[in-house]
Length: 208
Length: 208
Image 1 (tube, chains in turn yellow, green):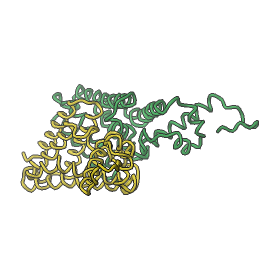
Image 2 (cartoon, one colour; image 1 turned 90 degrees about the vertical axis):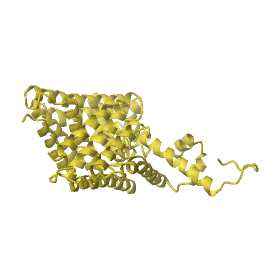
Image 3 (cartoon, chains in turn green, orange; image 1 turned 120 degrees about the vertical axis):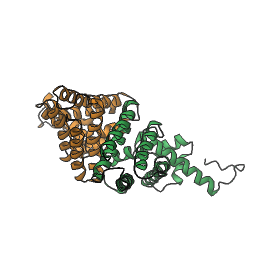
Image 4 (cartoon, chains in turn green, yellow; image 1 turned 180 degrees about the vertical axis):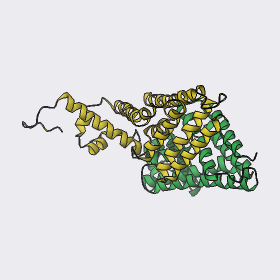
């Protein structure tokens, strides 16, 4: 896209924004397979057909690109997983969040499965702003599940003595493990196993 | 280690084996933080104080180094997690495997947590012999848990109608999630949450 021949119309701000969005959408997909460390200007240029200098122009540094990629992945996650579940409340919201997460994995929304599960594994042992941003996103997700579970307790859909943190730990473990297993073994049975496990865990917490 | 001055004694086969083992032990630790893709000859030479050519000499290619690293990680996992649990049988073996896994994470045996959890996330979306080797190891682990759970059913320590595959899916999800959470958030509460969750899952499967 560095062609400056007379016939090329001048690039507008909107063109630039669209190009940046294309690069970031591609970066999110690529990072689930190659890792955030594997995001190179060359690979992004290749995958988007934007020139290397065109990719460079949008980001000050590799870390800047990686941070913007995490922000873009957050937006995708909110749109695909969170927003559809927010129309319900309490227990229905809690099961909705788990179910939307499983669909997002099952439908291969991203080629390497959940962006944040991959990023948490990749960055877990390191330090720095990228790890902090991923950890914050993960805490927000746990916070969403916990708020829905607490509301389900208030609504008496779950028992009053429910260990909310423990319950949410189990639900999150199930969906994340379904993601890793499904991507590694390419086996849809893992997703149904996760659905049954979620049902078992929630049934055990319901008032008798 | 390329010093060939007259006073240096000739390197023996045993020296070579020890150097190779040092490189591989370092590679396992390094891969949990930098990924299997992040294993470069330069980083390994740096971390082991073996010269680059000394590192090169032991491996035909990067993939050869990566495959040997996975094999070495398997040996460590068997020594630290599997063998101690094998002295028990049935339900005790099942709980022992989960507990040894949690200790292996909690004691920071490897700086970035479980080698195979990290490798499964890194390689999940790709193809090739490295992914296959990691997937095989993961199946072996699930097989170990399943055999112990089945024996616990036979021994009537767990109910005869236990869904063994479902139970093992849940137990594995809990320990893997404890690993990722502990490494990402650096919070020991996650390990105790995992211990309680394992207890809850197994209690629910015991005969009443």
